[in-house]
Length: 75
View 1 (spheres, rainbow, N blue to C red):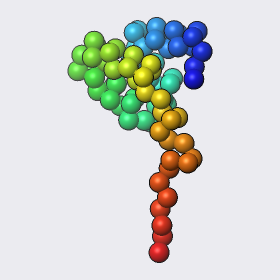
View 2 (cartoon, one colour):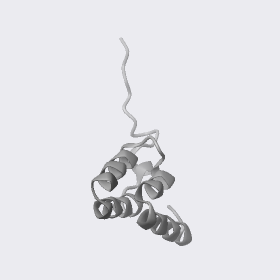
View 3 (cartoon, helix red, strand yellow):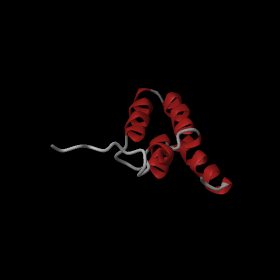
């Protein structure tokens, strides 16, 4: 989990440039980044709303850890 100062800085950056804020939290080649980039191109306000949602409420590490990764069986 991020510290309060880190979270405030990411939200401030997300208000100025929404895709950059999402990129700092989730990385540049993720679905969250591309959704934020498309929403920002379509309208600045939807990009800001999604960026704040992606930074504050989406916890990427909870869903993609080693134990929950699917196991592929090769026959």
